Length: 136
Image 1 (cartoon, rainbow, N blue to C red):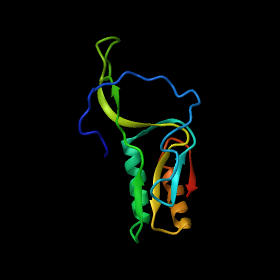
Image 2: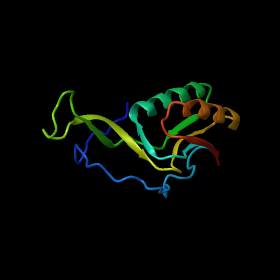
Image 3: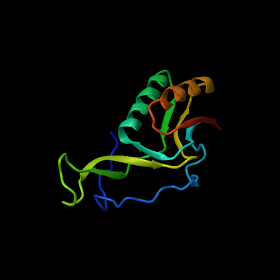
Image 4: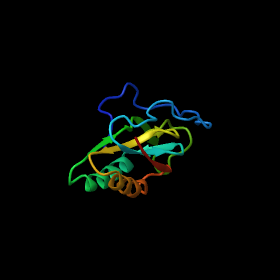
């Protein structure tokens, strides 16, 4: 699963919500001919990205290429069971990629556009954010 090799700060502060902001970068297809774009905001964790990657690899066995446009670099901490209030911040449990509406998550190329659309439809079930298919 994806995780950063090295972090400047091991634990991050919580950040404010998106309050309806749209993605101003990573919002267009750059590499492939078809892709998956988020329509809602949320966190996509490294397990979800790996699940989507596996679905897309199944479709590219006969040729084709996949580009993952997001990376989980935000640490999420969890406190242990039965730990009282206070007692410090919990340990890092997993990493997430914060996603804004309009962010391109995955791209594919080298296959017919119908196959890419079918692959992206199956892959979208693995994510917690709502997505739509886009083409170049």
